[in-house]
Every structure is written in C-alpha cells, then in structure tokens.
Figure 1 (cartoon, rainbow, N blue to C red):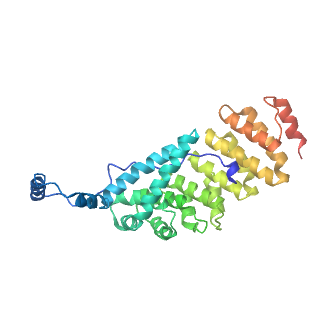
Figure 2 (spheres, rainbow, N blue to C red; figure 1 turned 120 degrees about the horizontal axis):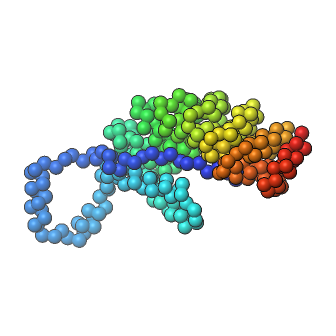
Figure 3 (spheres, rainbow, N blue to C red; figure 1 turned 45 degrees about the vertical axis):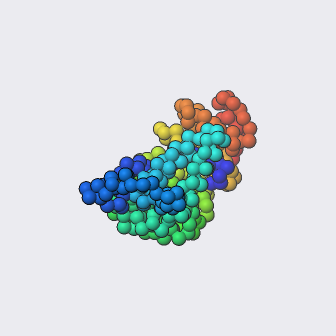
Amino acid sequence: MQVRQALPLAVPLLLALASACASTEAEKSPATEAAEGAKSTAPEQPIAQLVEATRTPEPIGKLLQSLDREITAWNNLFLAAQSETDRSKARNLEKTIMTTTHNRRQEILEQLESGPLTNRIVAAAALGFTRDQSVQSPLLAALDDPEPQVVSAALLGLWLLGRQDTPLDRIASHLTMGDTEEVRTNAALCLSTLVKSGARSPSALPALRIGLLDSSPTVRAHCCLALAELADSESFQAIADMMTDPTTLAAAASARSVAFLASKDIKLRGKAARAMVGAWIRAEEPAKTSIYRSMVELSGTNYGSDEEEWSKWATRLP
C-alpha cells in the first residue's frame, strides 16, 4: 500500500539493554588502580595531550550502551511524535545514530558476529541505521542466530536498512514459524515494509496470508496492509473479516486495506462497501471511527452518522 494510505503501527524496538551491554575492556587489577591513583597526583598533562585524549574512540561496550539508549529514545519519539518539533527531534536523533553507526560499523559488525549476547542484540538493530549495503549480508546471517532476541533485532536492522533487494525467504519463515511473538512481530513489520518498497518473493504471499491468523494483533495488522499492497484479492474476505477484530489496531488496518483493495479493483467495490457498512454499524469506538474514515475515503462522500444513507450507498454498488 502506498505511503498515503499507510496505517501507523507500533514499532516494537524491544532493546532495553543499556545496563546489560557487555564491555570489552578488562577489569582493573588492584595494581592498575594504584597506578591510576598515583597518576592523579602527577602534574597536569599538556593541553595538546588532553585534546588528543578526547579523540580516543569510545570503547565498543560503552558505545553500544549509548546506542541502545539513543535507539530507545528515537523509537519513543518516532511513535509518540504529535508535532513538527517532535518529528524534527526524531529526525535529528536518527541522523546522530546514523553517523555514529556508519563511522564504527566495522567494530559493530564484529560484535554482531562474535560478541556477547547483549552486544549482538544491540549491534543487530544499530547496523540498520548505517544505511550501508555492506551490512545487509551480516544481518541476513544473523537471522540464523540461535538466540531469538538477536533474530528479532536483526529483523529490525533489515527493516531500518529497507533495501528493495533484500531476500525475503528467511524473513517470511520467521513470520510463520518465529519462536516468539517478538520475532513474528518484527518479521511482519520487516516483510510488510520491504514489500511496500518493491521487494518480491514467492514466499511472501503465503507467509502474509498465514500471518492474518497470528495471535498477535500487530502481526495481523502488518500482514493485512502488506496483502493489500500486493493486491491480493483472494485474501479479500479474510481481510474484511478482520474489521470485527477485538483490537482497534487490527480492525483499523482491515478497513484501510479493504478500502485500498476496492479502490484498485472496481469489482470489489460493492462487496467492500457492504462489508464496511455492516462492520461500522456493529463496531464500538474507537474502531468505529477508523472504519468510518475508510468508508468516506472509498465513497468519496460523507453521510455522517446516518446508517440508512450509508446502507443505501452500499446497496447501490454492484
């Protein structure tokens, strides 16, 4: 589905690991601490040495801690932004993360491939911010990591990377058979976004259809929107049935997808209109408002809260 019709969905960046990121520095021995204590009484270093010291790269463990905090802050801004000021803050923070990860990408890659678990998790997500093609292959390899948390973060990294040439088979596999809800959610987010960017694979369509039955409403919503993007008219009824979903997220995604499919296929307009009106009449708020907006979008008119007029409109369509 095009951006103009995209439904905002929660982005599950579950990376609260700042306090757990493993540092690669060795613990200090008593002798080292004593030597450092002696240094504190030594004459001050010349300014040139102090300036040079500030250029020393931050140790990778601390860097990943910082990145974890920044990614979490960016995610919160990304989800909650209500004003242009908030959106500007999110963009600026994203640029900061992009700069840091791009400049240190080789070290971050090393942590993804051989670092401790907490570092691998943060590294997988952080590499997506580099927007660098060279990290695509390592992120795809990380989808085979034995730890579900690393797999989940790698899916986020691939989502952030957003390359149209991303192979979809492993992502589709995690959508249908992911060990955890977090893995399936991030696989749905990743697959849906890549499909919208133009990525294609024979494995995508069946996986997305299966995703409509997932226990997670976020998975169902992402799959619903992606199937509409793929103009999957065969899934029309399954998508329309989701308008009665108990969660607003899935019901709203269903309504948007039904309207989108009907706008692209005139043969579906009558069926879509009757499904939407019926669901709208039975729905409770806030899902009722979401379905109503999609009815207005499809009809090109507005009958307000008049159920009879909406029903007549739907009945008139073939």
